[in-house]
Image (cartoon, rainbow, N blue to C red; front, side, top):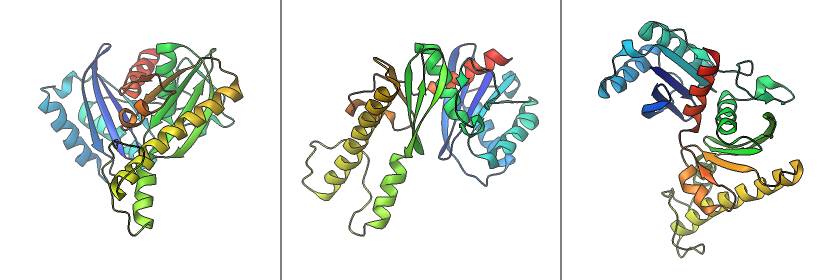
Length: 255
């Protein structure tokens, strides 16, 4: 079995694969100062709850955008699983060519998502990841990672609004009944959700105009993709496990 781990700034997503089949998956909070023992015990408990013996995990692949935690998970892999993990970076064989000015600046999660989407749909494809930041990644028909766009994530923007506006209380991020809110809560929900939907559509249109893509596939992933994507005109597919699938693909190409 393969254990795939995506370490993000807000959440860590783990998945267990048997061949191409995703058997189990979990999402846990990212805590930058947790030790390898603390994370190791937690992962042990998750596997045990699904009746997976640690000895059945023969391989581990990691994508990480939190440098402090990379060594932690490398230690977990060796101590608890006796496995040296494959860590994804710009040099890893993925099947796509990174055309960033400085390839070392491309987040591992963006590389993984681009690999998965291009493998699934070919190109051109635009991948939108609703995470701590909302990222747009652009892959050409030739499998070239052309670059992308990074904007503050939905939760970051919402938290900043609630913190800086004394009379605006934190609200649940759900779709309001109407675009025109009749109270503070629904007005805020409308602004956040429809505002981000409009942001997505506007950026996608500008990408298409600049690259002259006629009909690119547009894929959404990330924790809040299910909330925003249905309100957009541009997103054609929601793939919640895109990153885990990309990790599996990359592992298979490099083992």
